[in-house]
Image (tube, rainbow, N blue to C red; front, side):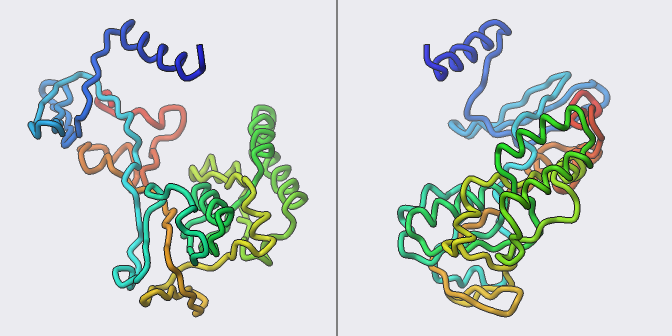
Length: 277
């Protein structure tokens, strides 16, 4: 049996064993805790029929992801941009952008991978990097995770930064600044992951991908950057992450997540709230 079929069979067996009856094509509109009944009241819309359905339960498990709405920042002149702009969730591949000037906004893993794909498909690619970032290979990350079992984050970070310097050299001359805090400290403290390099750095160092600073505004097809310079683009891909969606329907969860969707309580109870949520 192939891994795909094994996984599908596991899901079927799980549903059967625990007598779970999944209800599909439902969109949760509202959820609140009834203090008197000590139960959660949930209203969901049946997207097929349009009807509102109500459910009541002692426990509420939110497994939909706390940040699932694509986020595109407000930018002066964006609505006047004469080219195409889209969020990374709408990006398919770089084939349609061959020989076009394309700007990728955001330097997380999605941004770096999309920039690489665009360059590989012949697009004249630029990437806007606003903040300092750590760039590590997958092998470095795996090594770091192993070392974290035996050493403190401070020690592991020193090893990671040293390896990053040896492998990638000084990237500041290419517009990439390394943070003062280490990659594993930032992961633990802020939930911010390092960038896994899959070949993008090589393209940046060769000049096939240009690194630009943060965006300031847009004028027609011209994008103005914070250094005062402007460049024309045919398309902009926003790899700017997601914003909270749970706060639109989960009421009374201010104690659990902050405005960025990060759990307020510390580990090990950072995903457990009150009233059995």
